[in-house]
Amino acid sequence: PGLPPGARACIGARLVHTSAGLGACNIRTANKRSASSAMRGTSAGRSRCAARGAGASVATPPSGGAGSGRGAPLDVVDAEDLRRQLYLARDLWSTEMHCILRRGHGEPQFRLAYMPMRNRCEVARLILEEAGAPYDFEVIGFKRWWAVKEQTPFGKVPILRALGGAGDDLAQEGAITRFLARKLGLAGRTVEEEAAVDMVYQQLFCTLRNNGLTHDGEHYSPVALRAAPGRAGPAYREMHRLNNCTRAERSLAALGVFEERLAQTGTGVLVGDAVTYADLALFYILYELAEEDNVPDFAERFRFPRLGEFLRAMAGRPRLKAYVESPRRMPRYERPGYVYCPGRGSPRPAGAAEAA
Image (cartoon, rainbow, N blue to C red; front, side):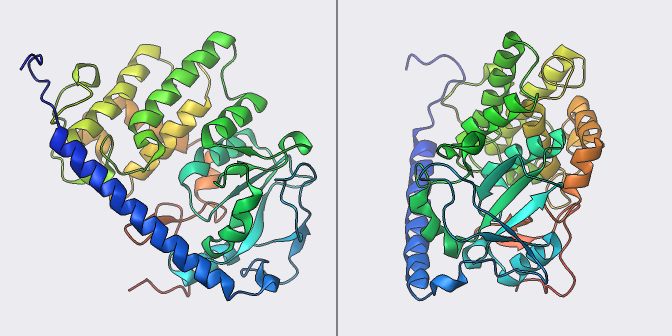
């Protein structure tokens, strides 16, 4: 009683969501215990990359503070060899490499460290790729993570090693994303544009990224959209925080915000007239949504013509196109087992059998 029309509380849905979160926490705890047991039986000499290729070069750890990747130098490996190793491992939990993928020639400007997947590091990598910056991607297999974890600021990845060539590592996805964007000219041209980009990115993070928890959740779900016949439900601005909308309806409302934003700017980008990290983040989401096993016709089915044109334009940018079609990009995975699977520009390597 007292709620405005349409504002039906979804306490039951929240309880289900909380229970699911607790279940996920238990799964992660079990995985951690399993990985810790595996680590105890692993010799220290196996800390180098299992995907080492013939004649691999060596990357020296960055200098700097306590968290700056101290330890034995890591091998710089061939991207195709690494992709093959990932598929042979089958899933994220079974990966045991610790190595470097290098982009560009000469001295790398940055070193990003993350596990062998896209997720929380992908927008940062898209920034580096779009800017053409030479960088190292430090790949930490799940079974190697527990030896690295204590050397990170908060025990989490991604991290940007030895910020500015000295000092401690930079943690937290948002901090890394904004730092790299400002450093490489992809954060907006003025202070006002920077604020607008930050606003749009935060909206995307809260909805299309489910507050950083998952890429398939309560606020946005490509899986739920697969079965949606068309655009339905209220617009985002009409939707109460507590509601009984379906996951598909919430997903469509979240995408609708960016369709409207592109209509407002009229420039083909979300802020101003130049690409920023907010555009790269949206590109990442839409590129995955358009995969064959998701909703490749999303623009037509859901009447999002501007989002469709945006995706085509971004995918045609030379550096982004080269990256998403290269083996440097980590493969997709299927849940619940985080099993590696192919996608557009990311085929299954020859000789790597499909997981049963």
